[in-house]
Length: 361
Image 1 (cartoon, rainbow, N blue to C red):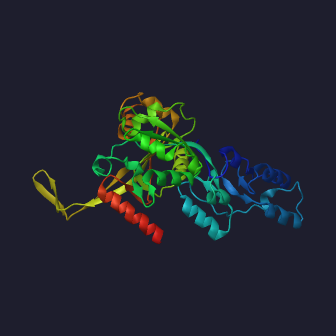
Image 2: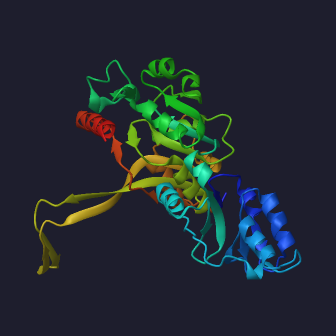
Image 3: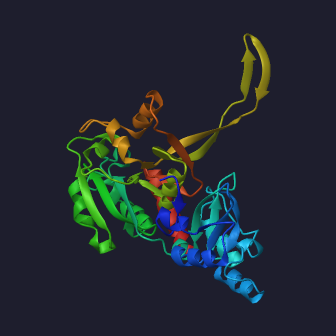
């Protein structure tokens, strides 16, 4: 799962790889087998040399090249390429601006690791990956609003918070959701049912006791076979869940946590000391830290680190990664998208205001 392809299974884009010493006939066969209207030409070292399209081959034939001629003369040596960390919106804008429908993805060594396709950036294919949403919290900081309504069902605009999350993920190609419910969970089930109203499939995990932001995952049965996304049910964001999943796979993560930069300014001037000596001053410094954004991608084997029915928060689960010597890798996904953890009445008011602003825009 270390490769990316935003349109086809990972093995499909590999069919577009074409050795530099190939003939025109072999290039034509590559285009036909790959079905992606492009051949990505690589050298003997596997590094990108250029690209070929049907038009390049036809122009070569008009110049007098034969079917057994080398493609070396007609390879386009300066294609537009992108690094793996470039987000979907930037990729889409680049492709539309340059009128290209395929965009190779290369790593820092210029090795091809995937291929963006315009059609599937505009209309993402369905993803087989599961999305689990933690919707069992009691929302104590939002009382009395949550006394008779679970927090994920609180309205933002004309939809519950949880519906915003499901619709956003559906637009990224996710079709299968599991909602972990506890407090007033019957109301959530009554509202969402089996998901058919949204053209998705929704199932439920029932927590007899609150199991924390990770503990409910121990109840998953059957175990997912692919990496899966986990989100808190009170996080409103424009994050591209599919981009985060692809990032996780490209970086060979076992567990990926979305993080945001959070900064706050100290109210006082800070005195820097060494022993009893003053060595400097900093007037009301700004402190910057990465904070947990409440969205994750996990590999199925991560579930081995949970005890069924035992309380566990995500911070505890990630700490276990750091404390245990194994080959599992926990990584961060730095996000810049709008994000709001609706934990208080002020947060709810802000969510309402931002939703109104989006509609106005």
